[in-house]
Image (cartoon, rainbow, N blue to C red; front, side, top):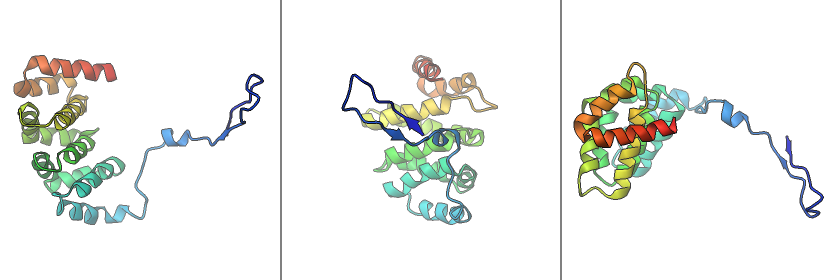
Length: 180
């Protein structure tokens, strides 16, 4: 327990007791054990309803809390479906799910580069794209640029420059470096 001492200068201050919460920052988040056997069915159900923002939003925590879901999603063509959802009413949710999908997943990055990357870049530069969606595309590209072995940021930078030009991509990389 963390105790906050009272001080003489504040006679009305309270002695607060705050529970020790460091376990929240030192352990990996996981799905409850009773859900793990049902992941394939959950994923299949979500995939049949990808036109609905609430269903797409559920993919994000699934990708984060249960990394094997990423490889299942890859086999089922989720990446293409998510990219197709960006241009409709589910754009923000689809981009957030794609971000969660790309984090620490090199196989996902390779598949993302095979078509989804170009489509996201096209959406980013399209003058009809709303500003919030454009910002979310930039967030996604920043996640994409993070090094995921065996690819380095520099290799990804060259791939991205083919779609967005070196000047813009260098600014993205500079922003990423300031975060790392």
